[in-house]
Image (cartoon, rainbow, N blue to C red; front, side, top):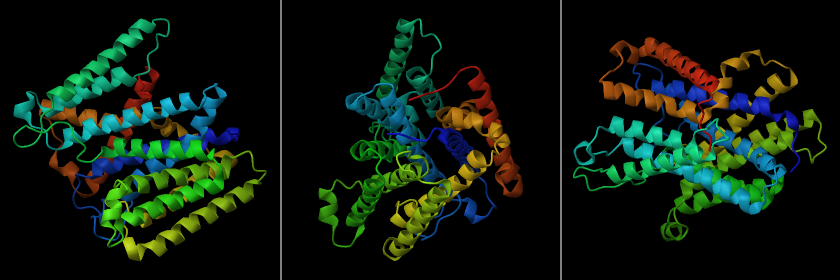
Length: 394
């Protein structure tokens, strides 16, 4: 699976920018008196906002990274079974973290569980650090295994302690999978397609069409029984389509098997973005635009925007050398999982301590400025953790 070597900078820049914007827009969720285009659109609004593009950008960058991850592991000697095992382990870890986080957000019964939800959440983050932390003592494998075993046992204990619902009778359950869980399912689909197609462009495009068709079979009137027979995984298929679009973008720009000039690759990327937008517009009357329902138009519009954004970053960084600003996004790109989890850890610590932000920071322009400052503070903290070699890696 030959790939051009210069891919890393632009892809990592896209990843870092996505995570920084994610922190900003998540903090804006509690801010009133700002433009509706900085808030998630309601499910039935047939519209999308700036904020609605952030999660698809996560999925898109996951897709762009998959071909390179496969190539690195194959070059290191991994065969099909080793690749499959690694893929399943990563997907399971993401789904498991999403499951724990979404149950902490809603339905937790304090009285039945015996501890505040903030403490339960912090213990979960500690377990995640034990399970998936990057340890710097390779010469002590027994200690590494002991720490990971302690993390697994802590996760099992927290799952046993959890009680949800009004009467405390509910256990951990996928009310929805959470952002990390949705990424995990879409990542699994993308890796399966990568293994089956070996990164060939036309089969990847056919897989995108199959994902959109699968969604349509679930949503068209009168096809309810067929949807049940197909396991009702339409949203996962839609999210997977965005991952596949990222994989196509990676092949357009970096597949060294094709003897294509730089201008031709950019032209192909623009054509791909235009085709995605055109299909999205064609499907809009049937399904509308909705992040909540993961409609095809939302998926394809967002994927088209991501293709254009990456093309601009690739031209700016890899071909014009304008990369001085990358030091501001590099910490988030180098440690993305910690960057995602840190705001949740901060929120749990504040909740446990009984602290809250002053009301003016939740309103208007001051709220916008605070959200930007908060994102900068989180990135600065991630940078400090990076220097201390405190990372999470699946």
